[in-house]
Image 1 (cartoon, rainbow, N blue to C red):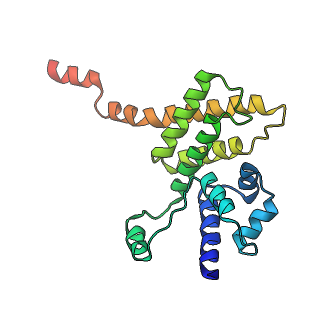
Image 2 (image 1 turned 60 degrees about the vertical axis):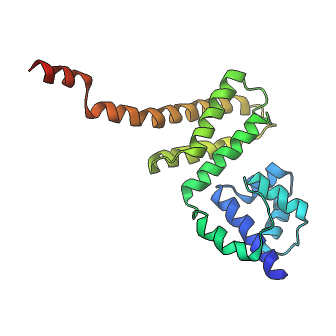
Image 3 (image 1 turned 180 degrees about the vertical axis):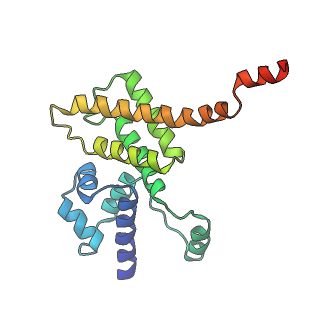
Length: 194
């Protein structure tokens, strides 16, 4: 029985790391002391099922009972995680927080909220290059760490969400620009005239 508990503790820790969250960040999101989360991840505390479910959901995961004979099948079809997967999960997790209007995102204008949610969902479902991943990671990290009690949080939310929307536009339209640079429209006309 202890092996299963340590496997779950290790899986929670791996999922937190893949999401790019520190223990402090995750503990704050679920309203738990960081020291208690540390004990759960290290296997020093046997967490209640409800606590494990809450941690898993905060990381964008779900718990299910799987028949033992089905585990090999699941492992063979589930993709291996990469750093980009952690960013995608982090973007979708932040989207849920903003969509739920949790502070400091509770006073965001509806139009801006809609644009930010579009950007986060875009990054949650699209792969991006390493340079853009680094920029996205920085923005998500700063947005995730904003203290909702701080009076200076609102201007930071505005700046960071503007950076997020700008990054999405740049990444999204970069592919279109590269395609249009390959065969400019004026060259097509010149070829016909020559």
